Length: 216
Picture 1 (tube, one colour):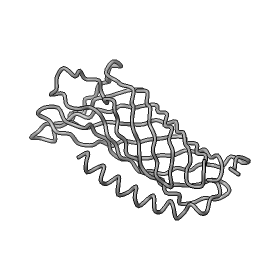
Picture 2 (picture 1 turned 45 degrees about the vertical axis):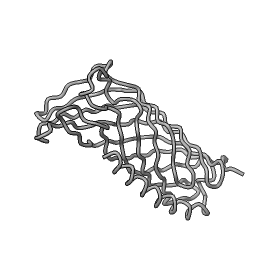
Picture 3 (picture 1 turned 135 degrees about the horizontal axis):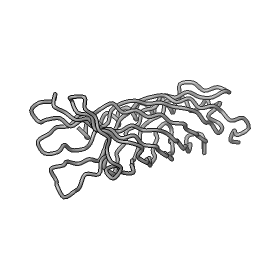
């Protein structure tokens, strides 16, 4: 499953990078410091299931406020503050209707760089809350000692679709690989599975130009 997600992401990044390069010759708002909101949605899951179970992705979303500044015509630096949802579904090996969904909400700081449409950065997230919801509808909050700080490598692409004196609009797709566990279950039992998390999301972002910040 991880390999499939990475192949899909690599293909999309290749297409986006080519499209972004064809757009790089016409920079208006992107010639200066910009700031604005963005939203993305997709899926998220852990790397390996507990013994006797299987895993599936669950809905994951991101809401951010981002700022971008061009270092050169093809390289820009960025910083985003946001709320990120991550999670996974774990279901019985022989019956996918018997499941439990685990979800964690993070407040995140995402410093990043964009190279001709290719985006790379490291996402740091502080857990705000966590829940487990069973197929019966019963839900319970996760205790704070089970929640981890998220340390996530993110890579993807940014397609600018509009750019004028007011601001610029882009379509984004980002994949994430977390080096930390979604839930801090003890390592003494290998049957608990691998709770490091992967995600793949697509969305949009609009950033307004701050007047007078254009790069010379």
